[in-house]
Amino acid sequence: MEALHNLAFGFEHALTLHNLMYCAIGCIVGTLVGLLPGLGPLATISVLLPLTYSIDTTSSLIMLAGIYYGAQYGDSVSAITMKMPHASSIVACIDGYAMTLKGKTGLALFTAGVSSFIGGTVAIVVLVFLAPKLGEVAFLFGPADYCALMMVGFFCVSFVTTGSLLNGLAMCLVGVLLGQIGTDVNSGMQRYTMDLPFLADGVSLVSIALGCFGIAEITKNLDSRQERSPFNGQIKLLPTWPEFKRIWPSALRGSLVGSLIGVLPGGGAAIAQFAAYALDKKVSKYRHEIGTGCIEGVAGQAAADEAAARTSFIPLMSIGIPENPVMALMMAAFIIKGIQPGPNMIAGHPEIFWGLVASMWVGGCFLLVLNVPLVRYLLSIFKIPYNVLFPGILFFCCIGTYSVNNNLDDLYITALFGILGFVFMRLKLDSAPLMLGFILGPMLEENFRRAMLISRGSFGVFVQRPISATLLGLVAIFIVWQFIAFVLDSRKRRGMPPVEPEPALESH
Image (tube, rainbow, N blue to C red):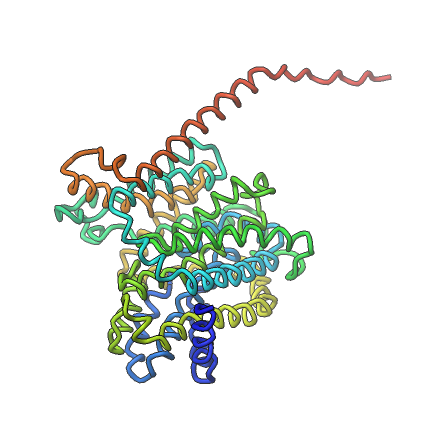
């Protein structure tokens, strides 16, 4: 009852006309930012941070938070319609864009919008009832535990890839190698930079994502001689009742996965989307359709994406630790207003804490009411012939890539990965495992080296800690299970009788 009382107290502050206006501004700005390839909440919040000086504390924080979780939905729109993902919408390219090619863009966007609302709602419930307790969970994870968690993440590749497992693992390894480019954090030595100064900071995730997905898709469309548009057929927005029944189970599973992973530092939406997608491919009733343009493939990742965006506030507000760069900027906004996030924030500033939590649900309602009806008008843009539309898409790709570091060299890198992405498509290699390896590889290396330093080179630290031992045990079980499944499948294929050719029809 106390939690409900606190939530009602938060709604008293969130539902004032002043705060509602700033919540709507944040959601609209965030959605527009998410629509543009390469741009994201980090750059937008950085630009708007000075404005918080002239806005009262609660309103400014509500607006910045709205930009963050509003951008998560906008990310899905660009990924589904144009195959131009941000870091948090890479998985949306798999089934979302496949639905676009089938003329079901409206249904995919509606699914993403509703699932995002479900994910946000579940995350709010988690925030209200479990924020202080889940904040302490982050303290239980050490370097060895995070290393084991990354290992579990790597085995999502068998579910994310739409091709063979061997090809998926190979692409994942390529992503890991790409993640090693740059300056070593511990020694300060440059690795695999080929003495090129612009590679000292590594390869941008935006450059790889826009190259391997966006530009590669444009090149593939131009290579084919068929006239096509990213949008085909009639606008079907509302799902049928059987289709809607397929949305909510995946959305709930994704919400729970995103809520849990969003709490962990270094987790966030980028990992939550892969985990939710892998879970759906394992337990969904329609798991055999996922990867070919299936509603579940959109619903689960969208819900996980939105839930992780909201629960990432838990470590910041409950223990004062920002888990990603966006949360670091949010922490700066708190400090600018003279508030120190941490264990004393709930007791010292309840109107800000609970007002911000309540505004997240209000913002979810704004996103649902504003964006879902606008899908019909958004899709009308994509009726433009593709030979007219693709230069504009390339233009926004260049703007998004350049805006990350304000460096022209990033454009050349993006173009290079566009060529590589096209080659991958021609070889029938999936780029999603590459992105998974690129995201998890540096995290695995960093936490592995920390664990080795703490244990003075002893590998026993991975089995001595309960969390890491449990996670590695799950990895071992998964490997054995995959091996047994492979052996049984091979025997089944060998035992099948050869297919005899049908007799030719006799001519009379």
